[in-house]
Amino acid sequence: MAEPALSIRGLTKVYGNGFQALKGIDLDVAEGDFFALLGPNGAGKSTTLGVVCSLVQKSAGEVSIFGIDIDRDFARAKYHLGVVPQEFNFNQFEKVIDIVLAQAGYYGMTRREALPRAEELLRDLGLWDKRNGSARMLSGGMKRRLMIARALMHRPKLLILDEPTAGVDIELRRSMWEYMRRINREEGTTIILTTHYLEEAESLCRNVAIINHGEIVRNTGVRELLAELDTETFLLDLAAPLAAPPEVPGFEVSQVEPAQLALVVHRGQRINDAFSALSAQGLEVVSMRNRANRLEEMFVSMVEQGNDARDKAAAGAEVRS
Amino acid sequence: MNAMQTAIALWTLVVKEIKRFTRIWPQTLLPPSITMTMYFIIFGSLIGSRIGEMDGFSYMDFIVPGLIMMSVITNSYSNVASSFFSNKFQRSIEEMMVSPMPNWVILSGFVLGGMARGLGVGLIVTIVSLFFTRISIAHPLLTIGVVVLTSALFSIGGFINALLANKFDDVSIVPTFILTPLTYLGGVFYSISLLPAFWQGASMLNPILYMVNVFRYGFLGVSDIPVGWALAAVVAFIAVLFSIALWMLERGKGIRS
Image 1 (cartoon, chains in turn green, purple):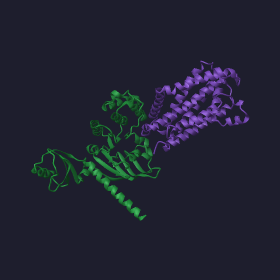
Image 2 (image 1 turned 135 degrees about the horizontal axis):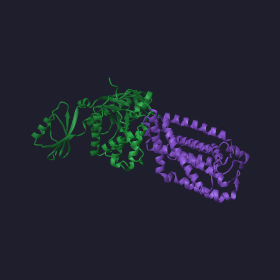
Image 3 (image 1 turned 30 degrees about the vertical axis):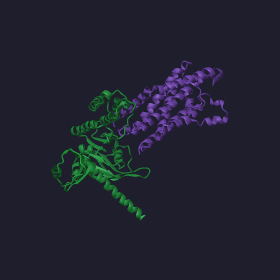
Image 4 (image 1 turned 120 degrees about the horizontal axis):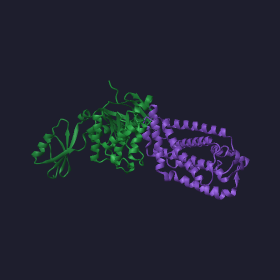
């Protein structure tokens, strides 16, 4: 059986101020996977990835990259790893081409190997025309793409993307998605992604782990997770405004705008029944969309459940003390 | 990394460092040239002509080695301190940390970059001094050896300063309050034989005195202190500071949470 691209066992991180960011997490990411690591701010996503990339020192636990234990041979493990961090971390005053070539040099690539690779990546990511300009002159989206090009210079087998499309406009985000899909599909690059755009995770990823308060609360396939979704809320745009929300037997309906209804559909209910009821009342639905992304609904409900359990435990501890 | 890959990584970092200080030459190369020209005009030509001889040499000839060494020390130190701290501040140090480059290569790359600037400025100041005096070098190999070692020592010092620094002020405190006074009191402008006995003894505690004196010995063939002992002290300091800097880097001091 092939070694997983990333294997984490009992990973713990306690910061100097005593804050326990990771509480012994276990995680496996299979080779070739497109994997989402999700969680609210401060949940431990970036700490986990920081340990994998050697930017954060772990307190306990084991991490292997393609079977290479980072405690035994981190340098060899790093050859398989490409990292796109959340914040811009290149010298803004350097030229674009110098940034990517220097990164190749740090991996021991000769100039002869690095130059064609740099051209290929910068062309693919729409930065070739900017190669001789200073990095600070790039737009936010271009800077993100520059970090992707830099991370891919040495052809890593595992690419870690920490919120790669934060602050990027929709058109560019979709072109970046397409690029990530392509390298995952055609080059077999394993991709681990953290994001706050759950639409992104749903659209791109096959497997997902949800981390909250330093613990993995779920680790499953995206489809399996979505199959557990009990309710979905749809927004229905009507042809004409209403004075009051209509009665739709068996469904919860509320009025969002004069000409917009929110329809809650529980698992097992047929949305067609709701349309029939609306039609019978002479109401014409002109368009429909999910109120929130499906994965987002699932994520919010899991995080809220986790927070409720934690609050109850904290309240219990307070009473006992 | 194999030996070739390690060499490529080191070369990449050194070239990047050299590109950095040459890109901003009006901040890095020009000011020391102008400052030293002022020293040569004011102290060497105008005031120096009234001072007369120092240790048997014209005052201009006496201060040239000291001023070259002063430029090398301050530029080696400040180059590494500001470059490494700037990498920390902009987080571009992470480019190196995520790569398989060993820590000793990172340290050596920055130190060699600092030496390139220190020695480059030293060369510029030497060329400027030729407009004011004729330089003759009594011991060329010793002169080159001591200036290279001194440059390495202060580059490592700048690296440790940058590792410990949390803000830009922290990288200017040591040069302003420690390095500059020690340099000025390290026999750049005078022979310690002019001092009363107590201050001669106190001066012997100043490490920069030894470097300036050995360098001057290389130029003029005269020194206030034993040359071999001073060279051994510089080499020992380099070994100790390099080990401390590497240990701090391995521990992630100042760069890993």
